[in-house]
Image 1: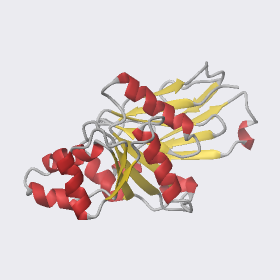
Image 2: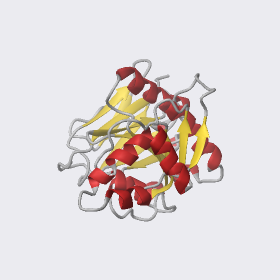
Image 3: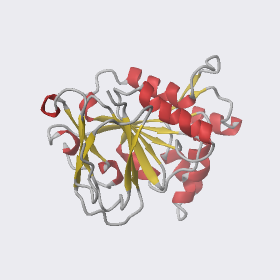
Length: 257
């Protein structure tokens, strides 16, 4: 059977004609028997339509992880939508330094107090001492896992969120991750590996240029495209081995088996 695939979409603001993309994986159970997984980037919109991501039955729930790379310009929007915000080690430096730059007409101290992470977690080898002290005094929980050098900071944060939100409806829950793309390739590849390690958790990696998430081979997929924030390009990338057979509808050049 084919391996999982990555879906990659540009986040530049160009029109993207198809409103929906349907992707089915063959060589597994019959398509009609496969559970439908619906994907949407409605978190890039100021107001999220209630229930958009689960056949209009449930409102989406988000958690936000911030890694140690440049913050996308839409980070405040993600912050607004998230129920919990977790900085991975040096990601706290990014929030402290760069969030005020996104609000140039406001006092930096006010912005820093407004965007206080709920948790800082990791091996604490990157966060600056003054940043750690600042957020600790504001009440941010600090979880030092410097004794664990076998997993990445992103892995630690995903595991923490899954443990902290055990009763959340997984069908409408997604973890948004900034700073996972760009920078050192070994870090980027490690972040893609986390998608596979937590394949039952919806995780979206985001930058100013693109977003990436996993399409598990056990499902057929419907992708709702927000043309005001995404496009015009996207890609389907098989991981680990050739994809076998894949069928899509809604693309300018669809795949047929």
